[in-house]
Image 1: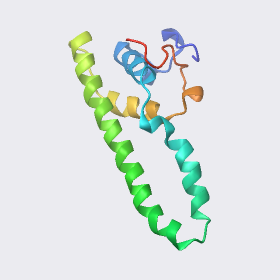
Image 2 (image 1 turned 90 degrees about the horizontal axis):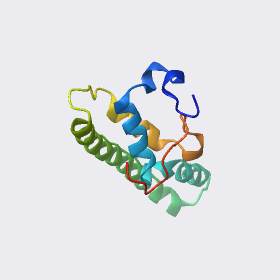
Image 3 (image 1 turned 120 degrees about the vertical axis):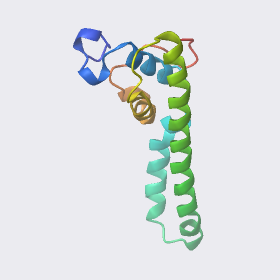
Length: 122
């Protein structure tokens, strides 16, 4: 399953559209990929009793959520167009959420393991 072999994947990961989604997400560096690192910093900042930090923390958190949502929307839009071009007639139902959730995972812990490197053409 970690190698991405089709026979070993669960039903939610099978199919050519899902494979395209995985490769598309893995071939790009996205802001949502790094949100976990920023989240650790934000949690640590929550414990500071500095009023200046507390004042800017809420807008920064809202900005992070907006960036992640916008990134997920753009991933889904481009991926659906790419899937319609390469696999006409295949269902793209659920592929936006699937790709957005994969983009938010740290690259090293993605399952199945990324096959393409960032910057590779798919």
